[in-house]
Image (cartoon, rainbow, N blue to C red; front, side, top):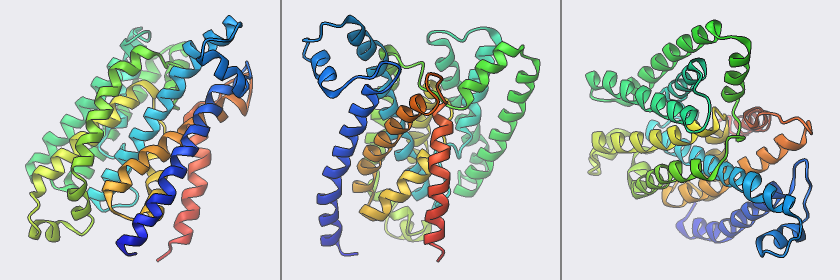
Length: 332
């Protein structure tokens, strides 16, 4: 595809994705036990609503939850696109370096110790994810941090974390086990503005770092030897990209739990629409991932109302069949 054709596609699809994100935002705010119309939402935001219940529902529950869904979806999609490029592996996802296993172990440990409220649970999950990421890099240093060694180290660290997690679940009473399983399946019910305030800087700074490395990501897709011949410092670029994408994933997973298929499926779709250039691909993936998770979270509150399905279950139900369809279309 020529550069002109890609620019034309960008001009068409980028505003469309922005519009879809706006629709997802309004839809997520309007659905739930208390259904609200678009006019109701406008009244709440401009201060003309006479219903204090609507005001409380929007500002205390739905707005932070919708914003968190957008942040988590955008972060997982961008991290997935970065990992797929640097590893040249279409099946790479944001959890490939054992981040999910470390976060899960940290969260379940906090629940087992009785620290499952306020910032303790996400803080423990974040520290667990960073510890797993650091351990993977430390192990991979023996082989100069090659991509294959990093993947293998991530699998081993993730497996170790899973084994310890299962042991803690075996030791835990039933109420703690239920709380742990609810977190592990992914949910956004912990959404609060104070949580958003401390994870947003991590996600935004990591995104800016990855966007600044767009040329490096483009070169990685051509192979490490070609990238090195074109002047790319492979070790520095790989470490920067892995660290940024890993920290971005750790920050959102610590609050939302394990939400699968967002970072695996969304970058594939966006790559088909925008092409492989990461200066366009990363922002577009952020928009699409945010909209996708907003829609998925709204569905999680509607499909089995008044009960709530974990959003990680919904993303798997939506993402897995579609990803299989994509693989079927791209057999070559």
